[in-house]
Image (cartoon, one colour):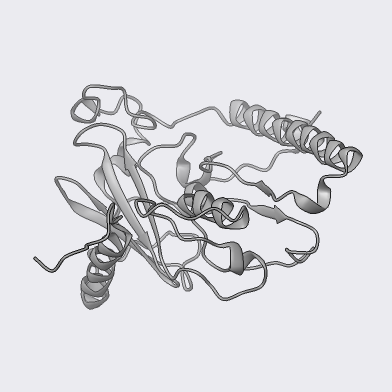
Length: 263
């Protein structure tokens, strides 16, 4: 469907991993040592990401073909809703679980690399008469918000143990429902175990049993090339972001049962 020769390939920026945690640089080695991270399971992405450009072009062309196939099949579903007279009473959401790398930052596979290429997902919401057609929003959304949103849209009470927040009013043009996002990769019990806090402008990533991390200014550095984690001028910002991250985790902790007594 797509010609690999027409594909434009993203590439690593020379030196961009010099100030990143060690596993980023290892991906650019022929035979990197990730033995400590493959316990007990082989961790996704913890391997060499060196890959022939021709193969990457072919993969990207295949990826585009898969997206076209999905687009066609989703169209069939929407047509079926029209035929059954259910379009105006059906909330449809198109999104995915994670992004992918096709050469960006020198990477070719998902893993403990919390770039926006992996975390910032496409999402389309449709419900005629409730969700404005053609509207575009930069408001923050999280996949954990989908369940409480669907429940509220269906008029079902939300259980107290759910972590997400309902976006139902937001999807109908209401105010932003959250001001931060938490993302996690916990492939193995210890490493790689990585948590990321994304705020309105800044983004911070920390690793279990590792003093390294990432701190990016998404406004000034949208390509996430300049890791501020160890830069002296950014240490105050890092402290503020770590505090915000801790508060974010505490705000997101579910309360399974509400307290009914003071004791």
